[in-house]
Length: 373
Ligand code: COA
Image (tube, rainbow, N blue to C red; front, side, top):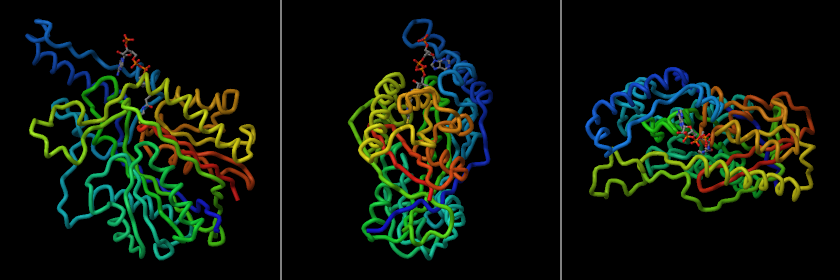
């Protein structure tokens, strides 16, 4: 058996930013136009008028201040309200593969490795732009990696579930080095016309290189243990599956063809599951919560993270113990905890213990206990 380690991480951050101010202005303009267009139905009581969104609510409810996106022009146009991403020909690199190559190149550089050292790519994300060929195989081809690749999806937990798969491959020897990549174009599946969730998501791509400890030549983190859990729930759902074109009715305005959630229920149900999962994982591996130097949590909602952090440590964690990045990136689905890890892990000292934990639709929870080597 080999000891798997995280040898490097990389983050691709889209250049375009939408502030809460810009977002709310666009949403409110959309709502006003909607109400004007449906004036008679609203007056007849047939449909509800759309209420305005507000910057104050967004910050209070989520902690989000801005988000990076692949295209802001479409999102901020009250007549469009979704990103305008050019459809590419089959001969061009796909957009997810392009983001992935950037993040993977950074992760390889950080680890002092090249594509020749890698023999597997896992693209783990909550939405894939096509069912096949796998985006991972395209990334493998673009980077010039010999070996294999596959895509997987466990929504917001995709990264930690893929890290478990990669770590198990390293442990057993079925792969020497695995790139786990999370290209998340959340702007494509967010319903920007729904006031209750229009502020939630952003776009990004993260990459994590997992290798055998004896092949690590730069500072790295030993993966001590991984743990995954799922429990079925419809409270976060997107029905835009591969059968959509077989359906006879018009899809454009069907609300279930985009991200939907019962946010309050998610909050109440997921927080205890996650805290319990982390505590049990630590205990079963012989670690006490007070030994944790850092928690890199999924970045969906600040209050949710504060709550989980408090439950795990038994007190309010310091910002250093539990760094958040969601104020700058919003919820980037599976990539959130890896952005936090990537930005806030270099300062840990040898022997320091930490836990990466992501959670979301499914429900799903994945945790990875790591030690700075
Ligand atoms: N602007 C202004 N007001 C808004 C608003 C907006 N954009 N969206 C909702 N509101 C209003 C609601 O109408 C409601 O008003 P009421 O009390 O008069 O009915 C009030 O604000 C509270 O709404 P609610 O949906 O209960 O807000 P919340 O405080 O629970 O926050 C979420 C909403 C979605 C941010 C929060 O529930 C959450 O983050 N849940 C977990 C989400 C999650 O992790 N999802 C996983 C995705 S992968």
